[in-house]
Length: 343
Image 1 (tube, rainbow, N blue to C red):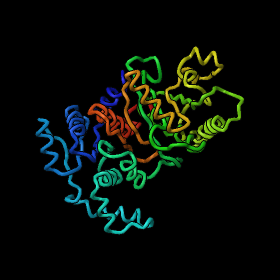
Image 2 (spheres, rainbow, N blue to C red):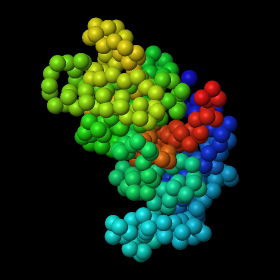
Image 3 (tube, rainbow, N blue to C red):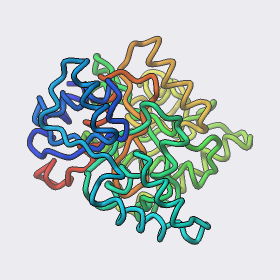
Image 4 (cartoon, rainbow, N blue to C red):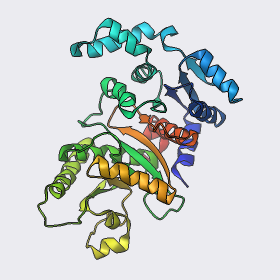
């Protein structure tokens, strides 16, 4: 079964509140309607109330069950502006600047997330990636043992020949252009952690490169080797259970026969479900190629390494993409002990 139907079932048992900063966007409204119809919790739409209602009426879309908030008119506006000022005062922020930013729905949504007034957040439908991500990285703390926040894409195939029942986790595809070995290790561990939470499968992490187990001292290969060992250490310190191997080529990571030919053994060779790319170029190009050429469903960017779940979606995302990303971050907000009773 693809991943989204699985997480829908989990959210129907444990409903969550997802906040959408771009509440007037038709795709957001359509995704929010699905959220209500499927009884997955309460969507929160931010923006001008009259405009949201007018857009919904134009779409002939029922907004019952959705909460609409116009930031400056909310009872929490002054409190949130004060919190933002306190967080950013050392960076030179003034009270007027804090109030101006709190009017921005992206900042308001992030402050809701930080104050547990929403369980997860999905933004980016009408914003550049940098403007959508900035409030998250400024306001939401990083997880314990994590120094670098990043992102992942979930690639979902109809056939179940690869990954976790056809699901693969690609990282980093949207945040860090040229990660160091230390950053790459953080990316590996945080991605593995999300994969385990969503699937309950043991993460089998492949640290990808252009060679498999080479003797070369090329700096790009050395970086991946170093990151692999650092990730093992970080995972152990954080209590994240995973199998990891690197450096290996992507065919050796996904095809058992190729892994055997290239003498890549262990549980990762040919059986990886988490693919860690050496840089943003390769990760971003890879997921878009797979999406277009293979017709796979893609969901993300799912932000990793922060204490609260959030997604930064593409401006080209469909309502289907928005709903899938929302379902994934909503599921992240469910306590793992409730998801898997044997844990």
